[in-house]
Image (cartoon, rainbow, N blue to C red; front, side):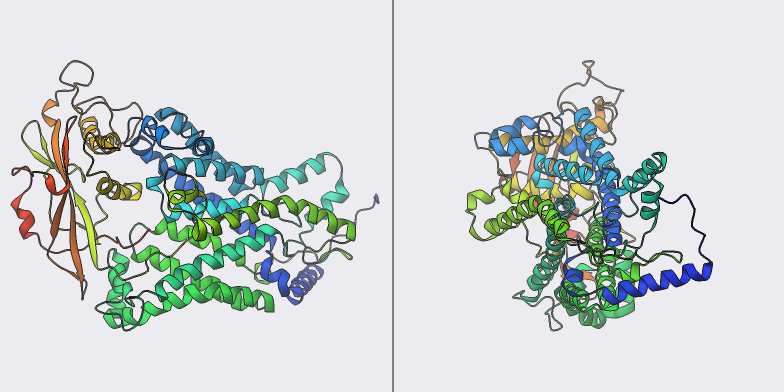
Length: 607
């Protein structure tokens, strides 16, 4: 190492070096390495955005811990354990170990910390492993809550465990890289530090089994989704769809949807509907082709089109914002290096340095292959398992009581047809003081049978997020007699609404530290004094749970509301399900028969 310091380059020399480096990368980008590999900066965008979105999702999950993950909620661990096998118990060992609310909060806090480490690039591979394992365990704790967002996180985190974060500049914009440089400076290794400060290899292509598998996984997601729409037997995603095209039935529940309708009108939405199918079918293949041919602008056009599609979904379909943003995260892996070049001042790669992540010698190549072997085996087994599950598995293997439906399910054909009707829920209940309230929307003025609206007509305003799974759970658990298998699960589900209402209205003491939830027996006296905070009159005695529907009509219209009684439930006592339930005449208002049309929930597919 020379003791002389090299002179600082002039601004013109720096600009020339930057232009030379960018031109070199642009000229060499293309071929199979570009199609199947990733630029380290693309990996950095992927890592940061995935970590941030994961943290947001986990932070939002805190509000559902009491209702869906604790022993005081809708599915206690004592009811889960007898239903699962030893493999399920092993994979879900942490979240199924205890249903204490404090324990579940501690686990979720660890998950949030791991997500932040992933976003910051601190111990990146370890953070990805912890994030994937804990997210899988959390999903298995209550599989009835899982929907397509969880499937996205499951696959994106799985492949993140094997991505080349530390090879050929893969630690771009990471805390690990900054700490390594700091360690070298303190150790006096100025030569290697100077080499690291040269970011000329930050746009070199790195190829690994994980980059190949992840790119192909993204392509499969959109091909499966697009083909499901294309092959819809009713032709809901075609221009000639009758009576309404799919976009006209889904995009009507937000202010953005109303603005889109005002801008395009019925004919414009009919024209726009088929373009969704072709974007899903064509974006990924064209991106791969553009990468192979070295056409950066083609790749960027495809990526931006996919991003705009998901942003449009987020703005026009309620409860899809986070899902759309996570879907956009996946496309970061396709970003080409020439259009990710850094600011002026970058030095060109050192003479003799390998380009496009290629090893510089046969020994290095052999070492690279040996390092990739474990990830190749793990990814191959995972892909083979998905093929087995979708093609060859028996019906019992697909049961929610086994891990395979959560671990290996890899289908994405949602929203495959136009929505024919919308559904929403109400739960009019009788209090001990004789008043009637809506337990579901927590409306003290009683149940409103007309469709709700907030800015734009929408039936998702009462309880959003993970609560959207409750009506489907309720329908599943509605016909459970005391002697039937699953009675306890159904009763715990239904009786939770009683406990929640009483806890929030001071009838029983709320769980310490819980937000907007209650606990305790729906029929007990709380702390033993018989009257807690003087609100005994607010105790919920019974309620009826209704699922309401209305047909989707042209011109943003809806038919008259029709109702279906799912359950009549006595708090702390018996419940009668479905058509056999005798409705309380004072609770079930006759106004339901005259309810006026408004608007509905986006209830056609998984959101």
